[in-house]
Length: 157
Image (cartoon, rainbow, N blue to C red):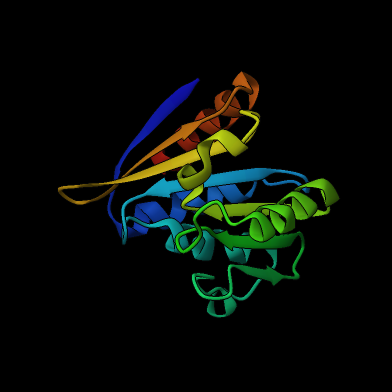
């Protein structure tokens, strides 16, 4: 099931990320997809304060592949932009996923579509006239319903 939440300018984008972060629990896997500069790293950075992190410490893991942050919830921030079905990286990713001791944000997750079970939450970013279009996809209808409900309450304010 997929919901398009709208075209967000920067302040609204930040607020949506905070609302999303309030639903984050250990073991959650969030796939982030979109073109270069569409908001994947920005989304993780915007989620970070709700997760007990300093947003200034959140950096794109393009060259390190995985950044780990300790906050209210442990955050694994993975970037697959530079990999091409690298077996070693996929094994490390499997180990992280098996731990289920934190939330895992995966940028460029679509580079290894066949790897994912389908149980993950997928957030797609695209460009629009005033900012970014954000859509969320999940098999968990209850999660999407609760996120939508909370967002409609916050967006009204």
